[in-house]
Each structure stands twice: as C-alpha cells, then as structure tokens.
Amino acid sequence: MSFGAVEGEAGAGSQGLTIAEIEGHPFGQLSFSGARWALSDVRLLSPILPSKVVCVGRNYADHAAELGNEVPKEPLLFLKPSTSVIGPRDAIRLPIFSKQVEHEAELAVVIGAPGARRADRAAAERAIFGYTCANDVTARDLQRSDGQWTRAKGFDSFCPIGPWITTGLDVSDLEIRCEVGRNPDEMEVRQLGRTKDMVFDVAGLVSYISHVMTLLPGDVVLTGTPAGVSPLVEGDTVTVRIEGIGELSNPVVPVA
Image 1 (tube, rainbow, N blue to C red):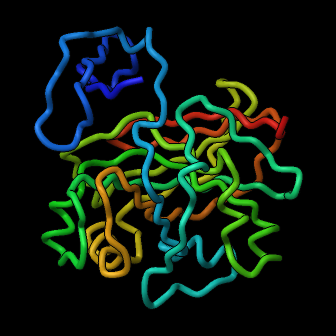
Image 2 (image 1 turned 90 degrees about the horizontal axis):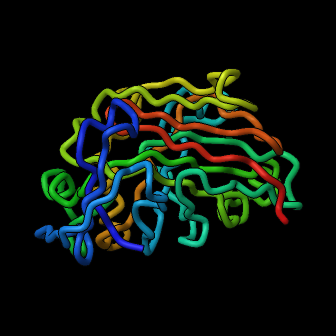
C-alpha cells in the first residue's frame, strides 16, 4: 500500500489516468519514487486513514427539516471511529442490530496542517489539505432509540471515503448527488444538493472544531448532508458524486 498522485483529467473517468507513487505521506513537500501505474490497474483504498472523523449534524436546513429537527445555533459535532472508514468499492455491511440503515452523502475535508488548534478562519483555510467524497452511513432506528449517535454512526464500514483527495478546489458551491440502485442502468437520485446551502461553511467549521480539539494531518471533517436520506438494503449500490471531485461507489451487503 502506498500514496499516489492522480495524473490526468479526473473528470473524464479512469481512462488515460495514471498514478504516480509518492514516497512517504502526501503532507508537506511531495517526493515521488518514479513508479507509475495505470489507474485501471490499481485498487483504490480510502485515500486517508484518519486519527478521527469529526462530523457535523444538521448542517443543511432541508435535512434538519426532513427529520423534524431545528437548525442548530452552533455546529452540532459528533465522531465516527477510524475503524468505520472504508474505500471505494468496499462493502457497506448492514448490522444485525438495525432495520433502517440510511445513506448520507457529504463533502469531506481533509486536514493537512500539523496540529491545527484554535485556528481563526484564515488559519483554518490554510490547514485544509483537500477534499473528497464521503458517506456518513447511519442506523437511523438506533440513532432514535439510543438518544446519542455513537452506535448508529460507528459500525465498521459506516464511513466510505474516496475516491481520492482533490486539492485547490473552491467548494463554496458544488453539487452533491447520491444515487442508489441495483445496477448501473437503474440508479435513482436520492439526494441532490449544493454546498452553498450549508448552514456553517467549511472554514467556519474547521475553525470551530479546532477550538474544541486539535486537528491532525489526515483528520477528516464531514460537513453534513442535504435532504433525501433514505434506507439502503442488501443488493443496493450507493454512489456519492461531488462536482469537481469524482464519485464514490459502495455495494451494500449483510454482515457475514
């Protein structure tokens, strides 16, 4: 396993894209080993394994409304464990404890600065390494019954991230789309929103979180989901697409 940099125009799909192997990690000055592979010949893992995944609840007013909740006056934070992280095409495993597992398509922020702590907005923006797609998979029935969200959000495989980290992107107004279906020709659009509709924007979120906990290189911030969350069942494939980044697809299977 190693980090790599995608070379080529990612928006055109995988054809013609190559991966240049990075020596060590991607934070700081990049150094390349000289090895290259066609993207179609490699398996993409989660682009990062964070020490923590910090999530923001009810950050889109339409999503808060569809669940019967008010928009919070301050960012509503919770954590997902690093063991919930999976990559592109890895399976989301439905736990036996839940009868209502739902998708939540989200823009994910990857931190690059060492020890981002008590950052103002400008420092928060400098601390951001890049962006990727994420799916904050949630056992909705357990979220309601438990009264807190750790179990509902924390199962293994409940945090798909990928396919890669895009740097230098203006995320102020990007389309977020989630599609679910049984085959590529019959995918139903379940969520369709734009990042401009966030209650709290990306720089404000990173700054706020850094006043609560130190953010380390590779940590991930999930910025909330637009309306349209709905159940996943065995045999589904769920795809998160974010403009300017790419797509993250995962099959849905029962726990073995």
